[in-house]
Length: 337
Image 1 (cartoon, rainbow, N blue to C red):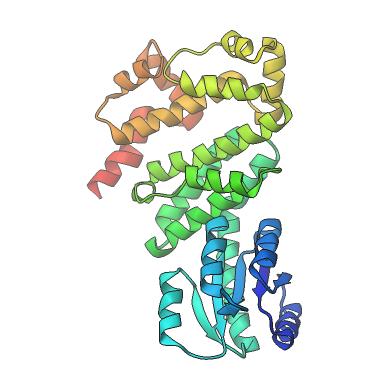
Image 2: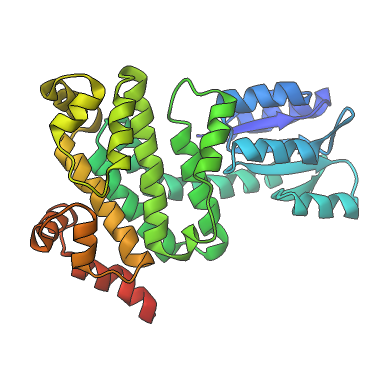
């Protein structure tokens, strides 16, 4: 379902626009805003995928308003509507990241074409990302961890460079919005914290590590909403990721028994504490492989594994291949392409 927001003060256009959307499958008008305040309220409530805004909303600038909306919902497609063609406004729209500058009256065929394009993009995104969302809803961290890598592989292998950044921004935005109770300021903070950089889109391993960090953040937020003391547990794991971490150490941090801590992990992560720690260490190992000259033995010792052979065994258990095979497949191959 494509959620559409209209920002316009003309009553007759509002009625005509709403009627056209009623006749389109898998699209709904979530609201009509006549000023910035109404628009931002609807954006925060529905996170629409498509926004149509008049170039002027009373004395307010529609182009600048769309820019502010994109800061909250980076994946949204924004269109500017105007009754006249103005080259300067068209240029400003393109520089502001507006998808297209449209002339009124907007025809049914044009609106259908624009939303059909968005539906095709939405379908592709859903096919790649739906398993991650489902894993989070079912509190299955391992599944989310695995499918994040599949999503990144498809994104880097099948998506044109022009759309790669857009797809990654879209999934980041939707993942952050899966955490209930966050206010506007908190959501903006996490979108900045996990901002997509040129480095992230330069290599699949960077993209994968970036996406898993967001997935891990969402799981942490959902768990901490129920069990506030789990925040100390997660902070301890991240701070001591290069050390040997025991269940008793974590239980002590949370001020609970080891058995109770294990039950919380099973409920909110669908894996054991030990599994979670190994997965976090393995992700860190992948990052070291692509950013340093360290060999497998050095990485294993750095991550708190006393024997490289044991680290390789753990890596293969969770990844289905040895660290050397992972390096050859995902890093060395990329370097020689």
